[in-house]
Image 1: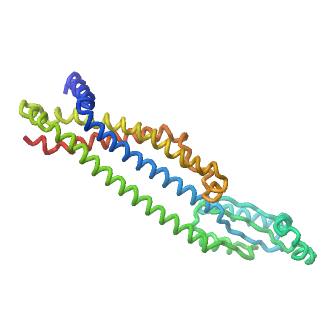
Image 2 (image 1 turned 90 degrees about the horizontal axis):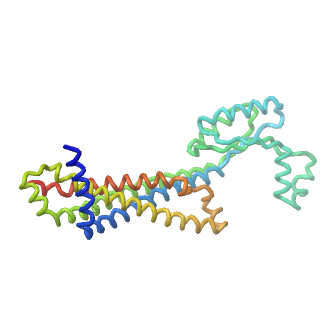
Image 3 (image 1 turned 120 degrees about the horizontal axis):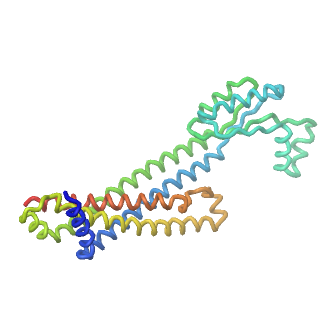
Length: 303
């Protein structure tokens, strides 16, 4: 195809958006709402994953060390625990007996004397507080830590970890199901809308076929038209997504209590991904609009 012909077809596709503005506007609205729902669903799914991850970070394993171990043995135990960072360990914090006692003194306040001072010696053991980056490995982590020489016991919140794993898996399944359902619904609606647009111009297609126009020659203007509408819808949905998402996040940020309860201190900041989101919206809109339009005109080309 010559470049002059292609330029003509592209121009016709863009001009058709205005000539068929009623159906173009309907397609634009459908695409915009569809992309808005999908975009918000993706952002919310990512944020839920981050929130659950924040809660998982508070799920710590306590490794208690025998009081008879030497400083060299403590260093060895620390190295062994840290060696599992590639597998499941995220952070390791050492708490000396003195630091543990000071923490208990602060916690119990006036009751500290009754509980500890009457003992006459520091009853607190050396302790390692270990956070896992993969909460599903908690059983393996406890098993490995218990095998270390000098470790007298390991305490881990197994029930809490199981609940978190179940919640995370449930949200993952629900989020995936919602995204798939939205995509299917959006594709069906877009297909029916573009089919109505193409049906309104079936006579135009029939005349072009009878005068010898090839299928490609007929499809390209429709393809460009659908792509152009999709890009416009992508830009509009991007703006609405930004407005809606930032409005919801600001509600939580204004209430410190909600911020602490839901752990949304480090959720996705839209400004950090705004250009990526814009590109994704425009690309998705262009593909959905173009493909939906071309697929809808298939039977009208059989003349």
